[in-house]
Amino acid sequence: MKSAKEIFDIRFFVRLACILLIIALAIFLYFYGKQRTVYIDNWSAEINGTRYSAEDWALVSVDGGETTEFAPRMRIGVPLRGRTHTIKVTYDDRSYNEIELPEVEFTVEYDTSLLSIPALVAGVPVEDCISEFIIQPAPEPAAEDPAAGTDDMMDAGFGDMSMEI
Image (cartoon, rainbow, N blue to C red; front, side, top):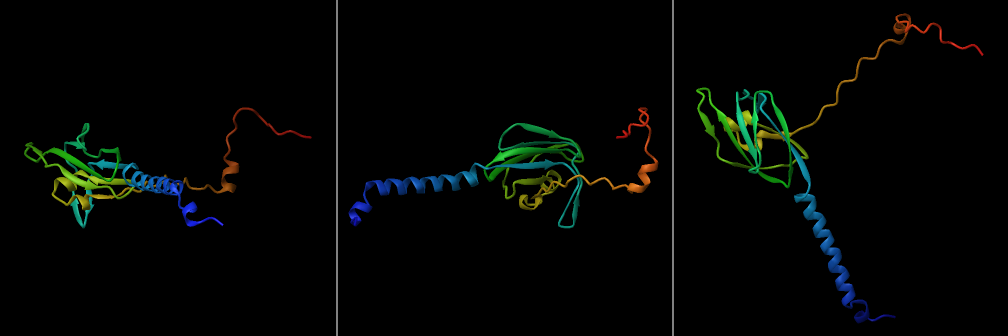
C-alpha cells in the first residue's frame, strides 16, 4: 500500500496545476475569444412602443476600427471578439448639421445581435438599442396539387421517352 507521501508527490501537484490551467484557459477563451456578430442597421425601428425613423446619413465606427457610411435601410454585420465594445456615431440632423455622438460602450449578450442606429441617435440607452438577431428561413414554396400538375406538363420536344420491356 502506498503512503500519502508517495501519492501526493510533486508530480501530482504539477498535473493538478496543468488541469486547472487548462480549465481556466477554456473559460477565458469562451467568454473573451468567442466571435460574435453585431448587425448595425439604419432601418426604421420600434422600441418600447416608440417609432424611430432611419437616418438620412450616418458614419459608424466600432471599437475605433474602420468607419462605415450608412444610408437608409442599410444593415452591415461586424464580427467582434469579446463582450464589451464601443461605438461612435456621426450623423446629420434635419438641418444638415453634422453631429458626433460621444463614444458609447456596450455589451454583446447574443451570438448575433442587432444594433439600431436611429434609436441610438434618439438617445435611447444602448442596452435597449441592442436585441437578438434571429435569421428567419426563407418561406417554403406552396405545394402544388399533384393531380392538377399532370395535365399541364409541357412537352420538352423529346417525344415519348417511355421504354417498353
